[in-house]
Image 1 (spheres, rainbow, N blue to C red):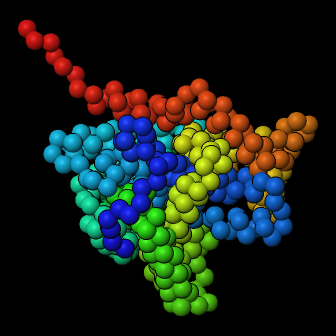
Image 2: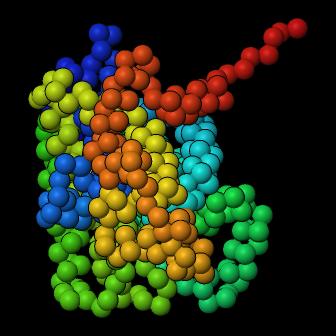
Image 3: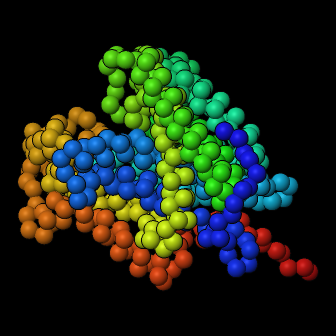
Amino acid sequence: MTAVAPERTSPRVRRATGKPGRLVGVDVARFVAVFGMFCIHFGVPFAGGWPEVWLAQFFSGRSTALFTFLAGVSLALMTGRSTPPTGQALRDASRRVAVRAAVLLVLGLALAKATEATGFLLTVIIPFYGLYFLLAVPFLRLRARGLIIAASVSAALGPQLSFVLRGWNAAGTTMSGLVSLVNSVDPGHLIAEEGIFDLLLFGFYPAASYLPLVLAGLAVGRMDLTSAGVRLRIGLFGLVMSLIGYQVSFQLVPVGPPSPVEGTIPVGHPEWLLAANAHSGTTFELLGSGGIAMVILTVCLELADRTGRALTPLAKAGSMALTLYAAHALALAWQIVTGGWPLSGVPENLAHLASMGPALPLDDPNMPWFPRDGQQPTGLVAFVNTAMPEVFLVFTFAFTYTWRHFFRRGPLEALVSDVVRWSTKPHHTPSP
């Protein structure tokens, strides 16, 4: 995939001033990402049977990859788009991105602490996002070609390096002592078990494995996304990349060794690095899910240009993806503590676990806080929990459409932007 000259500029992304406007298709793609997370955690709205199973399986891992890929696209859009910043502009952009990263880390840790009740059912990705942004700062100066190279190299080496380092830690080497020392004073680890090493290596979305998706998004964002020809090339490249990732993995592991359903590859099983399981963070999973993310983005960009205002509700929701992500995490925690989570059509084995009551195992610190009495709610609370996929989707459109009628940004989006603007604006000292 290479950067090419612009071919056609869509009038829908130009303001009257002639300056680049907001790419509505990117917001639509953000909505697709958060909608996928809704489907994973609440169930698929207005669907049942095999369509629900298929959609849930499709979004598993891929919504996370799309969310992460779009983080890189957003970085490009806020730092010069197709023209990387240089000189003072680069220093200013780097400072803004670094502050944004710090704010996301703080917000993410607060959300992770507030949703501890979800246990293994949800890992808040926002603090990982903060580290992704921080690690991407040195790459802001690169053009698309350099970023493609960086993304390719990190995708080839990052998951393997992560596996080796985690193995060293498990083997009790000097690294394990360093990790223990840092964790003992790391506020993120002490507050929510999401310290620097958790975010970099040991967590569910480790930056060592997922940074390639951010760099790929940054590369795509450095291209002219208003050009139909560029979009076509990105979409075709993503499709080929996805097919290669999944098919090569399938050929290498046709029936496979048993591999984990979710999460990073455990140490002691290097053969699982050949798999492409959801959330595994392997090179093959990055190729497969990253390629699909490119296809989804290009489709959303084209649809947004061709349908006019028809996708406005989706775009408004996507422009508030951070707020919606936090709201859905809090809603999931509420479902669990009220005992209503199994009512929304969750997998049978998990529904059984949630209803065990006094027999619920207590030796797993990552166990969700299911009610110890095993009782499920009744009345209105039961209805909301049973219809949560539909309820939350309706809430999403009603809330975002109303909020955006009065405000430019979502509440959390505005908070992050205001902190960044206040922290990075020049403070002039009065002359004597």
